[in-house]
Length: 328
Image 1 (cartoon, rainbow, N blue to C red):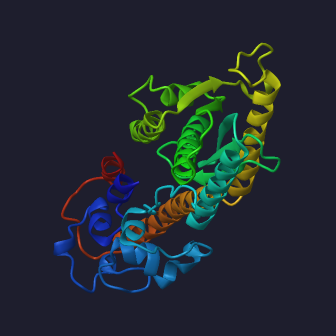
Image 2 (cartoon, rainbow, N blue to C red):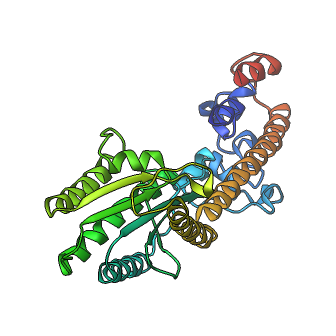
């Protein structure tokens, strides 16, 4: 588009040259140096955005808000900001999870947690279900480096281990120390079992730290894969858990993550951001079409002044040749 403006003569200097004249050789009272509104030596910015004689070409088009828009027809677009994470909501979710894990320790063994994650429109949610609880699982959302469901479940695994560690630090149980975590994402399970070190390294370090703290205190932490939505007919789970109990706990976490995702994704700024991008792209397209109309109108004006000029052009070249050269 910038090459089009330079080649088309969308200012007085290139326009008169395209018609075979040298600007510096023209007197100030020459019609060739005057805009349609009478301004001497109109610039591109004047012709496109300020000339009152061309106001009808700009009807319905907003004015530029930056030099990039005014001179290059390039609207600035901010990067996608990602979902708005409400820190108060996240803190409330962490407190709710802490209360449920403390209640589980008070009830006694067996102990189990189930995790799940969700992702949509740039939002990532996590959920943790605690065994023995009859209410909904605890869920929250977070802004991570990617918006994949696996990232949400990995975050849920870390939240689960961190909540259990905090609960144990408050109330040291005297009974068996065995914690089972049901995970339905193999990548998150691999991070829990410390099998991978090249993806989500920071989260893995947090998971490794909390698991090591529990193991140093005599806890056995078992990660068990439980396919979501009861996809697996045969499922091996550690004693005393049954396949049905593991799937029920997993479904509670799945339901909580999905419900939380539907709530936060509906207000995510992604749709607003895309609407802003579309509006600016439409403006750039409309502004370009307006510039072409202005160029044609101004070029016609310069041509009319050139035909009636009393001076001879300094460059005796045909208009067609000059126009072809200018548009190359």
